[in-house]
Image 1 (cartoon, each protein chain N blue to C red):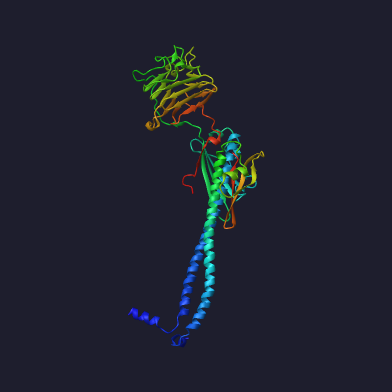
Image 2: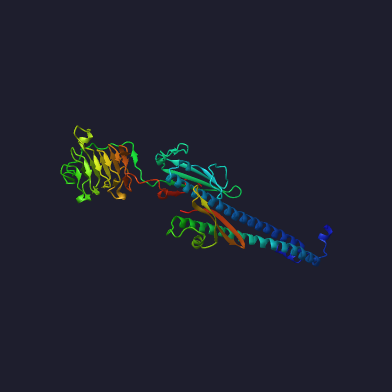
Length: 127
Length: 348
């Protein structure tokens, strides 16, 4: 090794070929790593945005439910879908009091980001 | 010297590509690790934000549900509704707070003097003492992610704050030249019956004296309103000394369905006030809000106020609220009119 290292005989061609091989293998691995990391970072940002958008929609619905402009605009899936700008709203089930009267709804809003689905759930008062 | 070494290295016949590649790979791997670390931390951060947001809406759901429970409790005089509870959004709420992990709600109930009322001590008779309710709701989503939605509900129905120490001026101790009801013809002759035909009455004088010697004041008409610059004093020296044989004086009587409005910063009643059913007496400051200073607004009832035969305000001095107040007080049990203040001070 010592002799090889201090020898005047060059073996640059072999070195270059081996280097290209090693660099190629590592290059593919690193490219994949960089690519997937980049996608995940972007995807995390999109997830953040989706969560914030759903939270904004919940706030809009909370406002609407407390300040209904007229009694006919009751809380139902169609009206909720009209009030929100983004996402898909679904009423999972009604919440009833001890007398069996509906007092509110369990509402789920789902939103898409990077071909993935994210959803949040909350309770909305009927009145 | 450095230039020579560099030229020597550049013109060296020995190959160093492999070493250069290794160094480059080390650099790339280091960068790769940094990039992966950043990606992982971004993933964790966005997942945490998702969990915290969901936890917040679970806790918000608990506080919204608590609002309905409180409204139900106040409306139906049901003290058992003011209990801590847990909930999973699917089944009904449980008053066992350890039953569900998803949502846990604590309620703290206060009376007018900020004393805490316990649920066990709460009953139908003392429920009207509830003045403020603190709702503290926690949500949990996945592992160890909790969040709080807190608010204070305060009865917006006005209440009189008693002044512990107050020296009301002696009855009859009026400044010279003070207009009186009798002199200004606000009462019909010596009968003590208020004349509403000229209402609303307005006086530029600082001090106005109501009442009349030996007679009570009676309001038989629907509306009587008087405005003074500062102070009005209702004084009947005869009543102050106690009823005498043959005297039927009763203080101020506002008959059924009639309303009296007094616009004055200070009102002193040295005689009792008796309100008939569905009648009321209202007090509003006469000064503009920006001119009002501390201790400027006072209501003084030497004999208290009765409504339909029941004492609704005990004798004493009270602070007149800047927004005014009517007696009897409005129904305070409608929670939808209560102030809802989000975010308890000092809470995160």
